[in-house]
Image (cartoon, rainbow, N blue to C red; front, top):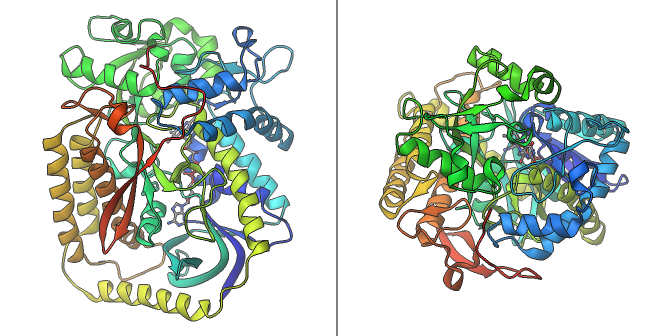
Length: 565
Ligand SMILES: Cc1cc2nc3c(=O)[nH]c(=O)nc-3n(C[C@H](O)[C@H](O)[C@H](O)COP(=O)(O)OP(=O)(O)OC[C@H]3O[C@@H](n4cnc5c(N)ncnc54)[C@H](O)[C@@H]3O)c2cc1C
């Protein structure tokens, strides 16, 4: 049986940071459903935050100010010591990436360039033009090869194996051979990224189905704060490809159909650089009130920035507009609308990235520590992935060195992989039933319509009914393909279970939380309610149903006050 000390599921920024920080004397492997360089991290555009103070307007920046902005941005739901840990670590994380070889953009004088981003008191977002994720991921990957990390590329993990409160390993599907195989591990780290494709309109890669969260949940690990889903203000209308916040950071304007910079009505001082939840709601309000174009989008205008700045700072945005929109942002405004973008919630872990189950850890977007609370600031997610990716590598290494091999784990793991194989064979033998791709389309459509930016009791209850119906229909689904090599139908089939669980936990969390906080806006409870709701939601699967618990938010120096921008 394949066996490792540490098995890292996910080859994005968090997974590779974990691989690089793991003890080199341990047997470490990274397993990923796509080649690591195709992980969604590669698409990150705008940048990564650290209070370096390189920008002329940033000289007074500090990790304390970064911490405060993160907590205020989170609508006071972030655990303050965790946010502080991330922001304190930010500058050294950036210098470490620089020393690894990440080619950041530079200011004259050769210092790392920084740009303003939403909700930040100072320009503190470090970037490499608008390809920041790509350059970091490629550099980390090179370093991982140099360190001889073992990679299982194009292997989909289908089950997390937890038995008697211990994590034992995983079951995986090797896309190339079509086989289902058990993998034993002393420690498993999930760095499986976001679940964006549970929604129809999303900036996420199509691979982001979120099965990591679902597997953890089904194995009995709690999911935290899942009702907090980030909707990015600016995705290209029609395609929902992200147009980075960096475009507004460089000075882009948001205009309605009357040519007005409407953000002055919503966030008069921060304007276009208010936090994402506020800007996304402002755009949606303009559209809903007839001040959008074709009732569906508004304009992001970059024309006044000029060709030179656009070519130098936003070259990929220019390419995206030309290749996917057929126009140049130098000459025409970009039609944009909000779309699902990021998951603030995730697998419940502490500041060391340990879950409540010994031997199971999580970091990056799939985890909730929580540093982003109810709303993440732009540029803080790459930072979270790098900082906590490194931390989880160390935590898991220490755990393995201090733990004993679990007896009899192999027979349990083997049996679980045989069960998975049998289920697959049974589904492939069936010759009629529901088509899983059609079920997926149904799920996405009502999640975008009913569990989106503006929520209410009626829509959320209806969404829960539709999820229950989809579960019934999913039982009748079958696999039409006769070949199991590179079988995308099996990939979707095996992840769909998780998507239903994620959709249910998001929707139920949103229905229960009868207040408005950060990204979670209830039109029927439109005020923040600290007396009742300054707490984290935890959902644990018990007898195939979600059990809801709550946990206090860890408040430090910053007492919750009303957010104003
Ligand atoms: C278009 C876009 C632009 C962004 N821009 C920025 C930005 O400028 N700044 C910023 O801070 N944040 C940005 N973000 C957010 C940020 O990029 C992500 O939150 C972050 O990169 C997530 O990293 P990760 O390592 O957690 O996950 P990912 O990079 O998504 O990697 C997940 C990995 O898990 C693997 N995986 C998943 N499920 C399985 C499974 N079942 N079996 C095996 N492998 C599995 C995948 O193959 C992949 O390797 C952006 C996001 C998007 C979508």
